Image (tube, rainbow, N blue to C red; front, top):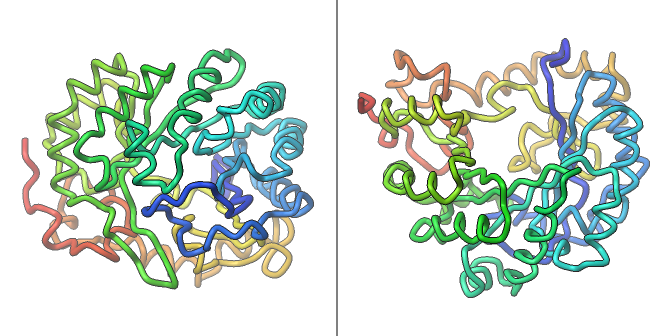
Amino acid sequence: MSELGVYGGWLTVNRFCNMRCAWCYATGTAFKPEDSMPLDMAKKLVDLMHAVGVKSVVLIGGETLFWPHLFDIATYLKTLGMASTVATNGWLLGHKRFRDRVEQSDITAIGISLKAGNRQQYMELTGFDGYDKVMEGLREVSKWGHMRVETSMVLTAGVMGNFTEVVSSAFDNGAHFMNIQMCEPGISNGQYDGRYMPDAREVARVTTANYEAVNAITGGKFSLELMLPACLWSAGFLRMLEERGQVSYGCHFKTRSGLVFDRWGCLLACNHLYDYPLGQYGVDFVDRNSFAAHWNRPELNTFYDRMLEFPAKACIQCLQYNKCGGGCPLQWFVRDPETTIPLVQET
C-alpha cells in the first residue's frame, strides 16, 4: 500500500456493452459506444496511479473487451511493472480469433462475470443470447496456465432461487474459483434502484443453506463477498468461512484504499457513483503531488466521513463493526438500516 493509503486502481475504459443486465451499475449511462477512454488519457491515469504507488489496475466497462486500446494499455502497464486484470462478461472469449489475441497479450488476469446458470435464464436477465459463447470461452481460457482466470456472480433477485446452478455451470465448464458477490443498487438519472436486490436476510439464509452444496461443487474454491452487515449471518458460520479463507469483507470504498477513474478522468469513490465525481485529471490534479493535495482536501474527508457513518444504532457497540463496517454504504439508499440490522447477532 502506498503512503496515501491506496493499493489498487480501476479504469472504467468504456460504457458500451452487448448485454443489458437490469441490475448493472452502469444502466444510467445508456451504454453509449462513444463513451470510450482515449489511449493517451488511459496512459496518463496509469502514470498517475503508478506515481502514487498502485501496483495493480482493473480494467472495467461497459464490456471491457470491446475497448480498442485494451492490449496497448496492458502492455503499457507491464512496462511499468504493474498488473492488469480485465473484468468481462466473457462473450468475446467464446470467439477463437479474439481469444487468441487475448492469450498472446500482456494481460495478467481475467475476471469473468457470469449472469445465470442456463441459456434461457441468461437471455431473460441480460436481453442477450450469450450463454453458449460465454461458456465456450470459459472452457478455453481456463486451460491457460500463464494468466489467472476467475469467475464471479452477483446474487440478484433473478438468480437467488438457483444460484448453485450458476456455480455448477461455471465449474462444469472449467472454472477454478468463484467469487460470490452481493447485488448493489443501480443508478439511473440520479435515482437509486434496488428492485434487483434480494431481501438482505434472505441472502444470508440462502447462502447459509446452500453452503455445503457450493463448497462441494467448488472444492472449497470460492469466496463470499460480504457487502451486507455481518450480523445477518451467525457468528459461527462466519468463523468457519474465515478459517477456510472463503469470505471477504467490504471493499476499497470503506477503507479509502482504491482509485477509480472514469472515461473522462474523473475520480470516483465507486463505480456506482459515476454521477458524483470527486475531482478530475487535468483540472484538479495532474501528478502525484497535486493528487495528494486533492486526496486530502477537507471536502473529500467530509464526504467519506458522512458516507461511512454508523448505519444503525446497533452498529455503535457491535464487536464485529470494524470487520464489516455495516456493509456497503450504498445499500442504505434503498434499505432502512434500523430494520435491516438486528440488535443481536446469532451465535
